[in-house]
Image (cartoon, rainbow, N blue to C red; front, side, top):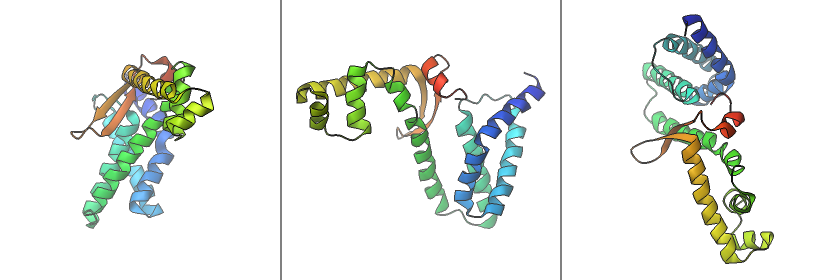
Length: 191
C-alpha cells in the first residue's frame, strides 16, 4: 500500500474515533484545552506510526492505547501518575467490555429463536429462569436447558466470529471481528 493510501485510511479511522478519543482524554486530564492538545499529539503519533509496517489487529484498541500512552507521558511530565494509572486501567477494561457487549445482540440473532429468546430474557434482560419459563410458556427445566444450550451456541458463535485477546488473568483486553464473520462485519464494517 502506498504511503498516501495509508494516510487516507488512517484519516478515515481518525474521523470515526476522534470524538470518542477526545472524550476519553478529557475524562483523564479533566481540562478541555489539555485534552485538545493531547488529541492533536495522538493524531501526530498515529500518522507517525501508520507507515511503520507493523500490523494492527484492532484499530480502535490501538488508537485508545496511543491516547492512553500519550496521557501517561503528559502525567509523567507533570508528576500526576500514582493513582491515575489504576483508575485508567479500570476504565480501559470497562471500555473493552462495553465495546464487546455491542456485538452480543447481533450474535444472538445468529442463533435459532428458541434458544436466543430465553437467553436474551435471562442474561440480558435479567429475568430469573422461572420468569423466563412463565413468559415463554415452558417448564422451568425446559427454560433452563434452552438457556444453557443457548450459552454454548453463543460461545461457539463468539469463537467463530471474534478474535479475543486476554491478559494473564484471563481478562479481556482487546478483540477484533474476524473477516470471515459476515454477520458481524455487516454490524461493524470498520472492525
